[in-house]
Length: 115
Length: 225
Image 1 (cartoon, rainbow over the protein chains, first blue to last red):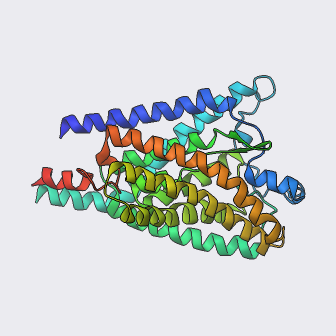
Image 2: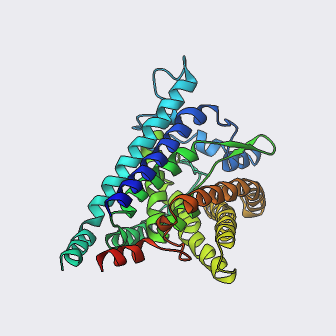
Image 3: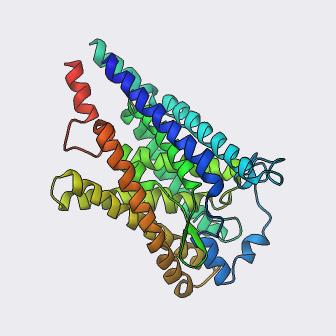
């Protein structure tokens, strides 16, 4: 049990390292062309509807995946750091949420193991 | 295909939001039973990978880019409920943290990508898997096929929402959205298949829907007994 649990965490953190590396090293060089929906909106002439609309939420700490302040001088670095921050943040957030949700199941497991 | 603010009317925003919140809510209730020592870290890893991979826009024909969605990858790994929770969480963080996708369209984006792409995508995968021979190759083929279709169907749902909102007629947008995403979906299928093949080689017991070998729950039972 202990050996396999260890290899589970090796797998998980190796996976996280790959995800972080993709965000850090590949994301800055991703295509900046419009995505499928944006392209259709441009071609069919309704992109203005979004451009003319004031966003309902202005509190995003890292708008457009570019860390504010360094986006103009170092755009690749700003994107790399945004990607890294986001990847680590969602990893921790998902783990935390899963632990909160798990509670009841966790008790059941304990009962089964001890019984 | 993250919809920004301004494309949808309030009726469509609310209706899709209610359905998406309901489906992800069910996922969170199911999570209580489905989460264990293995699926908690796997859910976290899956969320991190989907977030990172969604940043990697690749060029497709005609000055357009596409990126990985990850809905079918998540549901094949974690089942439909936890898988759609992963996508919902990614969309929420993208919207609030990175201003990607409008907050008024968050419900519609979750409906398209987590419910249509994820939950519906899971049942497409499940059907393909049942119809095809029980074999690792066909398991991957089922996931790849469902991944392609999940992106195409999600883009179709997006086009329907834009049409109901009066933003653009369905006859104009549906064929173009489906056409572009039929190409983007090839990337989705390739990445989904590749990642699953790697997990299958390293830790097949972590793939919830892979029941051709030792599974995490059977292994747990064996350990307890």
